[in-house]
Amino acid sequence: MPISFSDPKDRDEKEPRARELSKIASLLRIALTVTLILLAVWLMKDVLAVVFASALMAVVLHGLARIVRRHVSFIPYQGAVALVTVVILLALAGLVWSSGPAIGDQFIRLKQALVQQSGDLKSHLSGSTLGQLVLDHLPTAVGGNDATSGSLGSLGSLGSGLAGSVTGILSSAFGVLGTLAVILIAGLYFALSPAIYIDGFLRLVPSQHRASARELLMAAGTTLWAWTAGQALDMLVVGILSGIGLSLIGVPLALALGVVAGICNFIPYIGAILGAVPAVLLGLSMGSKEALFVAILYSVIQFFEGNVLAPLIQRRAVHMPPAVAILSQTVFSTILGIPGLILASPITAALLAMGDKATAPLDDEEQTRRDVGEISEDEARKD
Image (cartoon, rainbow, N blue to C red; front, top):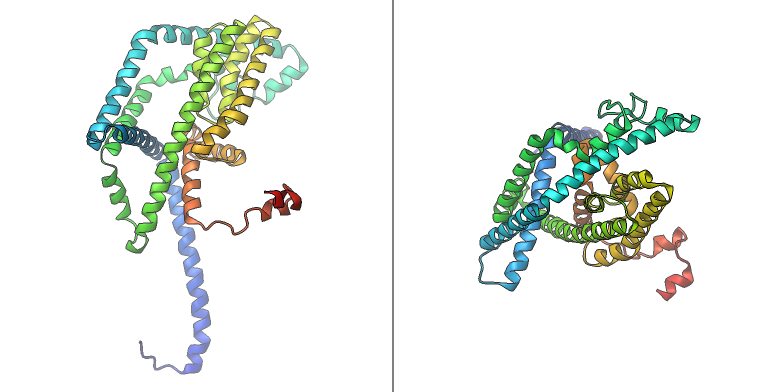
């Protein structure tokens, strides 16, 4: 115990002030730490997006490898990961070999059709006062006339804007392919030896908190695997139903539109709109009745997905409140751009899982629902 030669009265007067200064210093340290973290995230946003995408790929390979080992236990873990990787690559190669030319041709035709139809739509809107008002408030990135609203640059027309949103990836194919290669290779290495990277991260955590940090990481990994598996099934069902429904209506390029709908459904809620826009535009080229049928088709599919398919998947996967999902897409797309919009849902799912693991459950989970009027006292007693 330190020995002080100051007067006890002086110490009594100084100790409260010292405690206050200590609290202020602690708050300043926290604020500085948060600021530095946000600055680092902003400066390294592209790298962080690649790192998280690689981790998501590793979670997928790891989950599939564990399924293989569950049925064929004599295969070592690294062998199971290699086997899963080879099977996926062979399946993709077979798909490209058998259906690649047809799918590529449909996407090229889809681009041309969207350019023509969206250009006609802009011309039609320009002929009316209401349509001109809409165009004046749309950013140039999607073909509007408001040059101050768009952050993606002026494309000059609605046709080039929508076509660019569907096939703009071709303009930077080498960059995209290089990024995908990095994600796949890094994800493979993460999946081959996950313990090395987890333990390396845990060494950065103070020893007294390492057990809790390991539990949080495991909870995040389990949730990411459940979310990815559920979302893959959801995408497959939506894509198949969209393709079949569009074929029955008689909309051209139904295969490509079904693929677009399935891929866009990776982004919950917003993706449904993005996937429906090209199909509705092509429906308009056939007539207003066909466009109405396409809109009804996508509404029925999304109603089925939201009220039947998603609840069934969420029983085994993870539940994410709609408002949280949409706000997370807004926040992460602002920070990370397009990659943030794509990865917002898995990032949020992992954060929610870690938060749920780190916090204690409520003693009375029904109390808030009763207080806000979601359920009555009688309904609560029945439950």
